[in-house]
Image 1: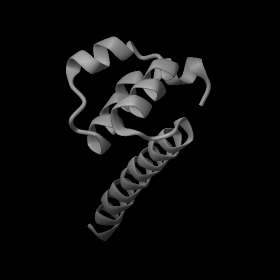
Image 2: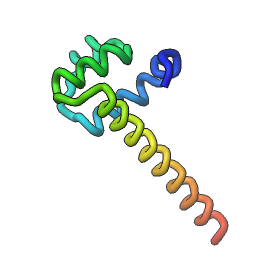
Image 3: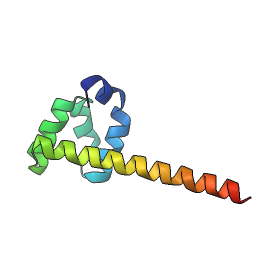
Image 4: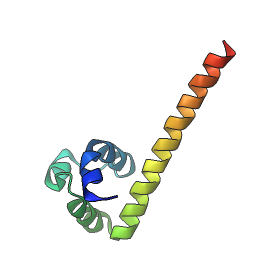
Length: 83
């Protein structure tokens, strides 16, 4: 994910991060300031993961979130079709 996309989706990414690593505080997020380099450095330091591992976790969380959204929409559509 490039820097512009990362910054543009910061609130969504922040939510995904909170799902995975709930112990990250608002102060931590304030220090990270939506910057991907700071985020990956923070995750490396706090949780002992590599940058690549952190990226993999975020990608996985994002994909899970997308799958969940698609599943919800499909269920809604199926419900409408049954009416």
